[in-house]
Image 1 (cartoon, rainbow, N blue to C red):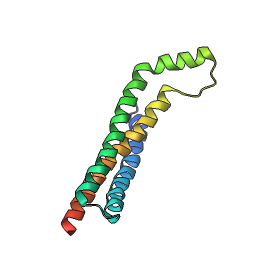
Image 2 (tube, rainbow, N blue to C red):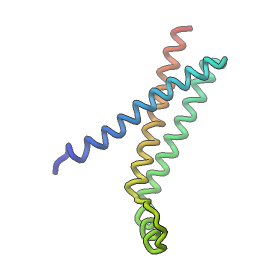
Image 3 (tube, one colour):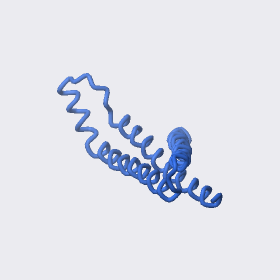
Length: 118
């Protein structure tokens, strides 16, 4: 079994969107602070939104795995012309989850930076 052909694309997907989430989380905290809010408020709010995205992705990913074949069969029987697949759904939830996890890390890092600056 060729592990590099299986594992590397998935790691690349998670790391690319995870780093994007880090950037979004850090920028989010900075923008909220620049609007006049405190660092603690900005950190809590941005971290909470990122955690919400991460939790939604975990729930969506497990739902895709649990009911994916049934939904695909239903779409096929009803001839709904839907291109929804279990694999596409899992990929989308991986992207959302990576952004959320990265956002939590980015919010935490920017909080440390801003607290050190004040």
